[in-house]
Every structure is written in C-alpha cells, then in structure tokens.
Image 1 (cartoon, chains in turn orange, blue):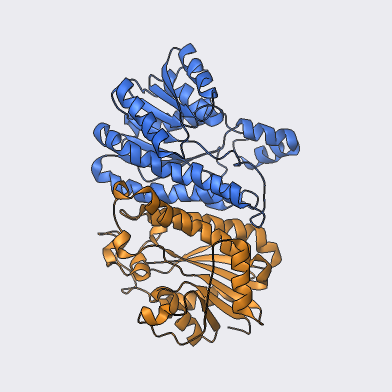
Image 2 (image 1 turned 90 degrees about the vertical axis):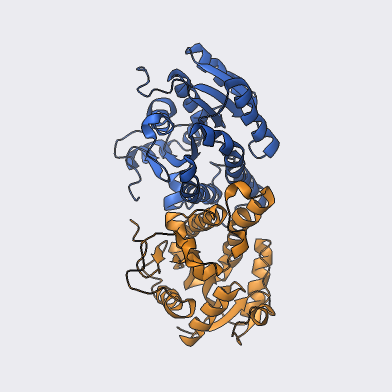
Length: 236
Length: 257
C-alpha cells in the first residue's frame, strides 16, 4: 500500500485485528475510536488511535481532520459492529429502542461517515464496508443487524455511483458474522453450507488482504460486494 | 380492467400508505379480488381509497395511522382484529414524502434522512412487531415494499435507496426467523406510475421517455393492473411457498438478482 493514511472506523476486536493486518501489509493505519478500547478488549494494537464522533457529518469531518493531520486519506474502512452476542434474539422480543440502536443508528452513522469523508476522498481513494455475510442471505435472530448492514450496503452503492467520476471507489467485504461479533459460528445459519475452502477467514489475514487488494484496484472495481467467507454462500 | 385473476376471498389485509399511489392501487385490487382491506394512512385520502374499494363492490375499513408511531400501528391491527377477526397479511407500503426528492448523498439533510428512516425502517419494525401474533395465527404474510434503488444504488435518491435496502435485509432475516412459525416475509420491488413520479415527469418532461427506454417491456407499470396482482398472488394461498425473496415487478428493468 502507498503513502496515504488508512483509517479504520471501529474500536472493537474486528477493527483492531483488521488494523493490525493492514499495518502488516504496509499501510499507515489509525483506528478511529476510543483510545482505551484496545487495552480494554485485550487486543494487541499498539498503533495510533484517534477519537471518532459519528453523530453528524460535520463531527465526522472534524474527526477525520484530527486523525489525518497532516497526510491525505487513502483508505477508509468501516469495521464497526453494532451487535454483541447478547443482542442476538427474536425481533418479537426487541423493544423499539433496541431496534433503533441495532438497525437504525448504524445506517445513520455510516451516512454521516460518507458525508463527512467526502471532502477528504481524492482520486485513488477507496472506502471499504466490512459487513456480515448474512447480509447476503439473511439469518434468524439478527434482523436488526441485517437491516442495518443492507441499508449501509445500499448507501455504499449510492456513493459509488456518485463518486466514481471523482476516481473514488467504494466496495463491501462480506465476512462471516461470527468473526465480527464474537458469537458462535451457527449465527451464520445453522446447517448452512460449509466453507468450501475448508477454513474461515481472519480479520488480520484474508480480510485485510482483500481490503488492501480492493484499494489497489480503484480504477476498475466499485459498488461491488466481495464475499470473504471461504466459499460458504455462493450467492448470485 | 379484466376481473382479478387472484382469489383473495376471506383474506384480511392491512396496507400502510393506502391513501394514494401504489398503496391505493394495491388496496383497490385486493378489495376487488375478495379481500377485506384495512386502508391506513396519515391523511384523509384513506377515505377515498375505501370509497373506491366499496364502489367496486369490495369491503374496506379505514384507519388514520402514522406508521412511525407504535400506538397507531397497534391500533390499526386491533381494528382489524375487532372488526375482521384477525389479519392474514400486512403490507408495509408507506414511504417518506421525501422519497422522490432528488439530492446528492452529501446534501441529504438530517431531517429528510430521519423521515426516510422513520417511515420505512422504524415503521417496518412496528408493523412486524404488531402483526406477528395475528399473522402467526393465520399463517399469513408480511410484505415490505422495496425498490430497485435498494439493489443497484441511486446517485440521486440516497435516503430512499438506503432505507429500501434496509427493508430487503429485514425481509431475508425475518423470513428465516418466522418460517418455523408459518409466517412468510416477502419484499416487492415495483416500478409503477405514482403521483410522485407523475410530478417528476411534469418537472422533467424528458424523464418519462428516458425511463421507458430502460424498461425492456417498454412502459412504466400502473399500480393496479401491473403491480397489485403480483402482491395479491404473494399474499394469497397460491404464494404459500414463497418467502425471503425480493420479487421484482418492473417490466424487466432490473435483472441483477
């Protein structure tokens, strides 16, 4: 990867692991999130962390300015996960405020991120949305998360259409849900097809490699979703 | 119009956003196919839809309902239970009044976004939450109206595209969750002439021809004859093995699924 900065939005284990993997590939990575979160999560992340505020597009803009000072933005990655294992449950048992937190806020935050990042993205920049692969096929007991992720994926395509002429590309990387939220593998649908490559990806390994590869192809790939699930769901 | 080809006799169907446009077309068709329809919406135009259904010999009730308010949605479902004895299908068709307002993603303002989110995503949850006990009893169906913009993106309708995408995500997972309960969940992606689209054509006279040229069948569908029969089929007994899908009704314009 080249000279510009890579910002990873997400101060949970998936974000830190992805940041570590991208660093190993040569990127200059800053995690946007709570500086104390890596230690609290027991994650090995010794790279820079900068506070993020996703409450509005102007707050995002300010967060990016602070994190980028002084360099240009090359890669922006969304790796925030709105659900914890205890959030997994039937829609019928979800209260309205839980729906707002799980389904609505993540789309709003992603909208703010794109709006706030727009002026920082220049020709050759790329954005990657890390989403659970259940966004492609659905899964019971995570209706809010699926709604949020599919809403984010639609927004990603909106921006991909809008910003393609500026030379900015945006793509989605769909990974098994359990490696994002730490829940057991059956979250990705019990009885579903096994990974045909025989193993699941890791955030700091295969997922980081795909994000880096997509960032190197800004002239030709945008608006796409790449499933990095070892060949489990081969969706049309 | 020829008689309805789908039999909805005895079905009890609640439609959000039934006062105009596609919602009205759905309601009128459902009524003419034998369903008893609860027409809901925020405006007084729900009464016009009820009158159109009755004029065609159908049976309908109206409920003033802001689909973003839990109490309103629960009240509409209660009305269906009290007056019709239950509910066989809930069709969430209501959409923000900003749906056809053109904007870039950068310029989408917070108020418009919040309205998109409330009328599509929050209301989708409220409809599902309120209707489940009845749909489980009747082994019924929830239909969520979505859009091609949800699947292919739209450079000019960012809020609309995002929330319609969210409804597609909701459809997939809820269908898997509710399948064991005998309840189906289906998304429908229509291309239909609506008052909002007609207004857009007035503002931009070239738009209609451009849009028609994108449709392999060569015309923009009408709510009642072109879209409603497909939705009726989905909620009818004939559609009982269809769930978790996005059914595209757009003259062949979108073929990407």
